[in-house]
Image 1 (tube, rainbow, N blue to C red):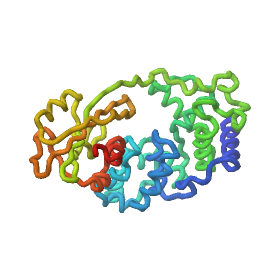
Image 2 (cartoon, rainbow, N blue to C red; image 1 turned 90 degrees about the vertical axis):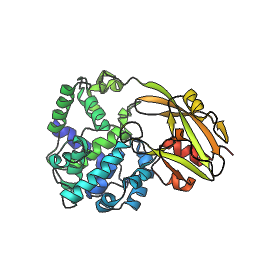
Image 3 (cartoon, rainbow, N blue to C red; image 1 turned 90 degrees about the horizontal axis):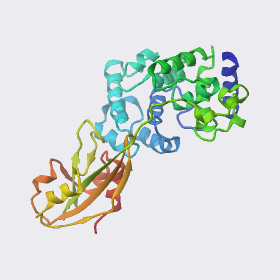
Image 4 (tube, helix red, strand yellow; image 1 turned 135 degrees about the horizontal axis):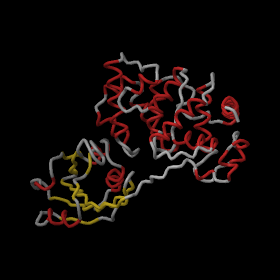
Length: 345
């Protein structure tokens, strides 16, 4: 299939079968498109559908987001994961308001110069909002193109990634770029899936190199796979008089900038820290939590201090919050679930 033929087939399919009911579709508002693109990075559509309207209700436009405290932004993002996205989102809004007069640049290059906006996200905003002829390469699009073209390059290589970018740009139609781009994304999400692709429904099936070879699931090729690690830690759930002790995590590392329970590197370390404390404690069931690079097992110790007991130094710097106040903060998902559960009677 020629490049014009491929683009025309994708555009026809999108107009007949593509998704039209997602809340961020049908708009040329860069703020809304940008927000959806950032939320959809490494997150399933079903999850984003829960967060997107809540976020817009609290921050309806760029100015509202820029003026908000970061803690409020993180609180709305809590549970969505990959919290650096929320910090970049907040910083980018502030830069656009302060340095761009509250208006997003209309070009991919201008958008890509903003904090936290990569090439593919910048291209999506430029195409959907400003009619620019730009290619995107999110995970869905990579899968569709590498299969259709039989692209054998190893995307663990920067050179091969650049070669795929060049091919993606060469396939762009002269018009309807927004429809074509949405079509590639929808094809990858609903038909050309990572596992069990539905080739019979694909408009590119007749010319798809991967289908012809009988190996669609082999694409895209990426030799360097993530090797997951395993970690364990202990959390101190310290309460006194109806309040709980929370600490804010450092600006770098896991859960950066979020409020959490004091963390200790092992059960033994936490047991040693609370040895001789007044009150009573109870070990709760371990919590399993999967992060990008490792699986984390967290061991919570619920400890209740008697009223008016001084705070032990080992609890670390932090603040007392009521449970309701704590749940309004930006919290890691497992800590939020722990507090919501009520824990120790």
